[in-house]
Length: 482
Ligand SMILES: [Zn+2]
Image 1 (cartoon, rainbow, N blue to C red):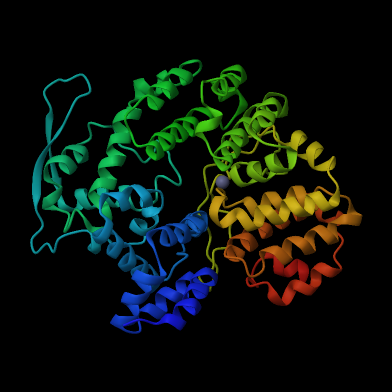
Image 2: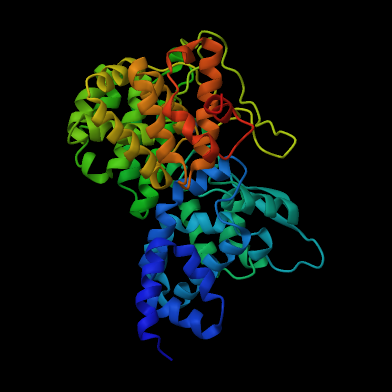
């Protein structure tokens, strides 16, 4: 059965509201077959997931899902159809966004129906090849290990902390006995994906001793070792990002073990700039800017980006740790442990829990203030709007809205603040990340209130957005509805 005229309409719907099209496909088996086979393609599914990859992650950090459970089940259904049709080729094409679907799949989706719990004896190998120690692994232990692996998309937030040592029992279990636990190793490519993550752990070799090897000058040789590994490119890059995050993020300046020269030498490695996308370069340079300041990073930005406007967009999208505590801008107090998100009586999260809130210092301020100050208002408006529009795909930090407010609104003169604030509200309202932005901007407003910094913000036209602000319990709403 064909729908020659409907096809045009359905393709238009795909481009403006992908999720509405998938939902429509559930109306009948014939319609689903037509939409899944004639209107959608593996590339369009991957593109949709990629355009929302950061939004998914940021919502998850705030204990919410970007997709409803029903929407996630439709996406899985479509993904599974392409998996069966295209096999390994589709895994290669989609693995960068697969973690999102795996993260929002209930645990029962992966595991067999267990009538009786079981306990197994599994070996914990020793790094230096001594006789393994056998340990008991029960069903809850196994569930916990698989949950730890699948609950976040590691490729979007690569880190060494969630990786076990490569000789942990779960690696042996996954290799030898995963069929005892996994209902279907092909389901959402869960087994190949976990195997690939385990291969990353083996290549990074994150034992205490070996992580020490990545400190100081050693960082370069560890990075080169990973670059020479046989991992798929996307996993290789994620491993390097995990190591760089771990080694370069010092929560106090005196704890930094990698010199600014070593950081600069990364960019002198053959093929270094060509192996990264602009967003990845922005992320790497943002760490460098925070840890070493503008003097170190400016030449690297010139190598990596066409101009300052482009550099600023990708720096803001890639940066963590740019939200400072005005009471302690130099980070002289002991860094506080991360505080959990507080929840109000409606279950809304209101407190500044953390994406990365416990690093209170950073050297980015002068560079950002001077560079933004050298640009015209039109340029700053353009950059700000661009950052907000690219954030659902590329923004890494839940505090991004806070950083935009601090530098683009509080950072400009009082005569411009109303224009900048109105443009910021105009671009976040109705966007995928409105909920996250309102939260982060409210945090910036609360910090500025404590610091007396809000006095320089003129509020005239910004007030007209008050009716379209969603979160009535936060500081942003209180400010614009004054
Ligand atoms: Zn962050």
